[in-house]
Image (cartoon, rainbow over all chains, first blue to last red; front, side):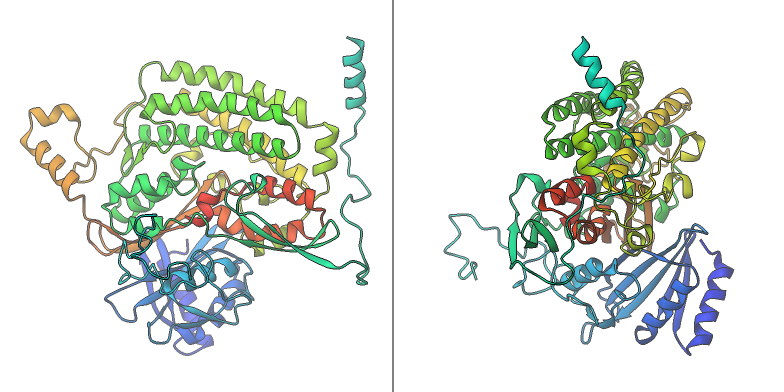
Length: 169
Length: 420
């Protein structure tokens, strides 16, 4: 982990490269986190990759309902040589949830970004295969959003088949 | 007798030095003579190790392109977890990767412990290590048995499941369950190990290395295994890293990245063990790395048993861990704590953490976001199978379709973990 000072230095460096690239830094429970501005997130992540964070260990979405902007995408970066981790977070709202894809930086992001699109509806510009991954392709809605009800999906049995019209579509 | 020794002599003459000629499919030099055929494999196919669907583009018998389609066992566990108190989440996350249940519970519990800054007593850490390493051996045994089955060696499955049965008996002894035991809990473990567990575990640990040697004697120089696995599905280390691959698949290329060594958690730094690595990263290296890992795991278990510290097996902080049952009869305070914990659960300070551990298939990370209530606002598992599956395409490209099955077996995906 970079310590709190190291995190500020990285934030400073990214901020120098592009004005306002880093919105905030959080150092919580020994874990360093950068809050990036959505437009400059791709460049900032590329800069982090060039700094040695070569490995994207995870990418996942979070719904911050009722906070605004509601959706968040987390990038968990890892520097294997220095055994160092840093997280980056980008917040987007539900009106226009579009981010630049990082598949060109880390091919591993392919499945992760598809999952975030599937579950939260964040679209990734430049993604080579922007489809749903876990839910059926014709599914409507994004189930991991906080306003999506639990149990919102009817369980189909032979006896309630007529009461769920058009389920086969 | 002479027949047997003749066979052994031929077997001993097999050299393990690099083979010059690659057994992979012939090149067509860009000029296609055959028509391409799209073949759908799965989702119900015995060789896919779960409900995995593969869309293969074939040229004759050669796989030219491959697309994994997943989601057939998606059960929304992450969503379910958001509606449960923290202590109730453990049993549901255990059901994600159904061969690595101790690891799933460990990832979630350590993330929660980091959020509430809860100390885990040393005895609990050692007990967690013992069970996780047993689980690792168990997972590798299932992998070995089913993979050997894919190569045509049916008897390996029975041998592996014989040892797996011993491990499941041990799980049943310590927690009452053979699978999904809810043994690892926030703050420690569910119960101390019972009488007789140690003797039984020592018995298992003393026989297991010998068993692994017996498997190795059957498979290591077996001609079918060598022809099917050596120099097949080689993917360079850098490409695997870009694809986010971790665990035995990455270590088979010679990269010794293992979180137990690199960033030790749960007292792994107290144990003396080695990280097995391969050389070129073909299927044979993947097989050898996992075989060696089983032996190293028994060494860790042995050391953890020898050095098992005395003391509590779960945190004594009554705000997060249930009080012992006998206290309920005499202490009003214990009764209140018990009631509050069971009905309402505990509140976790707001924040978000990502906690990675080394699962049997690679980095198993758990992201937990707390909004200050008694239920997690978001639980996400970075399951190694999900990420590693992306490496199947570069691995299986331009191989024969029969080698695709062997490669998939060596990739060791668990669909419960992929679809969650």
